Length: 151
Ligand code: YYY
Ligand code: MG
Image 1 (spheres, helix red, strand yellow):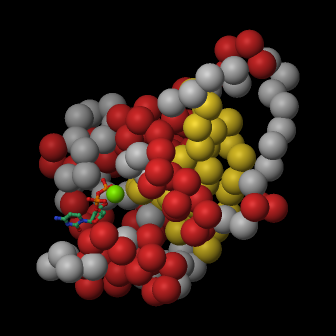
Image 2 (cartoon, helix red, strand yellow; image 1 turned 30 degrees about the vertical axis):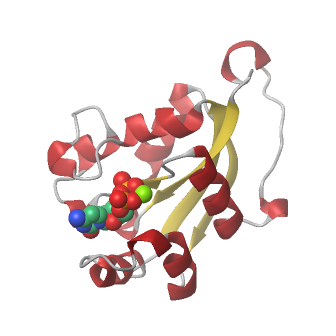
């Protein structure tokens, strides 16, 4: 019931700063299931589709430059209400307003280097997952403990 999937991506600054493990650990420890994972150099084409709603914003050119400045680690996490819960775990877009205990609140201070991406809605998540991952790259697997972490 309400089992969803969402796209989480550690941005180039997060990879550079060796934060990938700590960020993944938070989602594992919350109980979500990892169903897709890859490291990639993002193309301008992918990013312009990913951030299509922001293309008229003044910060858009800087955002594209930042997001293509180095490898990104993209993940798909699955679980009960994972879209909203992961937004809460990631924290406010502007790290200056992000609460301590969130990824952005713990690891960043400026909106132009906010470490991580998380889909913002169920529809957005579905669109982004299709954009970033091929079907065969998403794996269905059974947890040994179905009772709490997976159902
Ligand atoms: O979904 P989220 O990442 O929290 O924020 P969005 O409003 O979708 O913006 C995407 C991305 O753009 C944000 O993570 C940082 C960057 N950005 C920026 O550099 N400056 C802003 N004033 C707003 C957003
Ligand atoms: Mg967004």
